[in-house]
Length: 284
Length: 267
Ligand SMILES: Nc1ncnc2c1ncn2[C@@H]1O[C@H](COP(=O)(O)OP(=O)(O)OP(=O)(O)O)[C@@H](O)[C@H]1O
Ligand SMILES: [Mg+2]
Image (cartoon, rainbow over all chains, first blue to last red):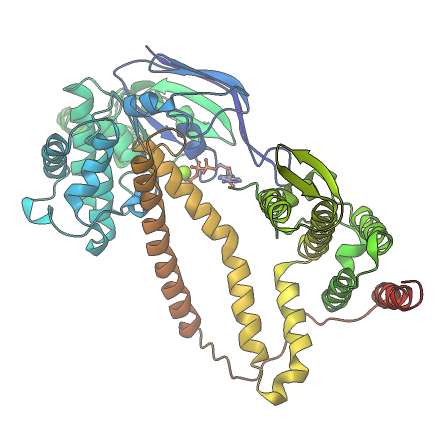
């Protein structure tokens, strides 16, 4: 089942003097099994958009379909728990949600809420903690004693432990060191390719978009500016310009080389191929 | 969470909004005193009329006032039940089986209800039309005469302003934590009693942790910028009484005096 948004609008503090229209009649269709990046300037509505996916926010107008569930504006939407099992959402600042005495217990909290026994949940939790790159010595530590980046990993583990079929991550790598960020992105990519999970990732890092994602959705001021595949997005520099996005290093290098008269097609998106082409050109 | 109306500032452009916060605070106190002068329903009708007028002048919506009062409904029902059970004077109004409801119980409840509603409206009028910062400045000014007897006016004002400043932040935080836990399957509406207790814990612990963290950060930030509560300071915003503020004084003092006269002569 693809994820579809039909004319979805969301207004914060509706019917008050503070009303703010954060999403304005959004139409969007996200195919199964893709890893999609959601990009856009600060305050453009990315977090608002992704919070609709597990019905934390209910549209004020329009409707959407996620994981065989239909969510319609102005209706009592019951039994959202099952949807939240299917769609795992990691928040933009997830470190604030930790509360148990030990990390294992905290990660096991999600699965237990969905009816998995304590023993089994503990096993799942341990596996998830290792997956996010923390070793066994962390199991019995208090989550409150961790650094910001470690807390973030624990929070991500907490969602992975629920084994959702759709994984939504709101800036999961903000505040991680570059190496750690790469590891996390590789992990999400692996979950996408090996476990066939649909992954949606909000990010400001174009390198990550280029290296790990399939599609790109650009959000601007509550509208979807474009929804294209990665190849098109980085090939056609007008896309990047329209989205006011500073391109990743490879693309900038490609452009500089083209300006210097090198004959390099726009389809080149990776460094090794670019290097080979330059070599060929120089040899000429 | 975001829709809590009680104590919220509503930015509108009205006479009441423009009034001096000191004048508003003093009038609020005077009006509160008025409520406690027992002149029966006539007195309440007069005070009520003044409040309705003020609400209209402040351009506040009925819907907002209603939402500000809503949290009190539970308490009112509670009071009604207690009164009916406890008060056994006056004549019997209603007999259900061998259980009697007395007239005084109903009258008393009406009194208390009216008083509470008036009080909430008066305070809502103040908080909805006065910026929290202006309120603190006013409180500090009004407390200044008591400095000589050891009242730390500035410290109190600073504490109040920080508390007010952080109410929305805390609500936002609670909202965010609730959403994060809901994403992990916490269900505050459905679920057994034990699950609910656990759900509440999953909310309160992170909220406390982040509040303490915020308090510490704020204290450090203030100290880093050389804040010293005892230091002499000047103020950017100067308060000044205008004609409308004197009018407000006259109205509220007049109201209080009128009610006292009513109490002494008529009743
Ligand atoms: N709880 C809220 N109440 C009112 N307005 C809000 C609320 N949350 C967000 N907004 C507003 O909605 C708009 C979109 O916010 P959102 O959090 O979705 O942005 P974002 O694209 O995720 O930005 P960022 O990259 O900074 O995370 C912003 O302009 C913001 O001011
Ligand atoms: Mg965001």
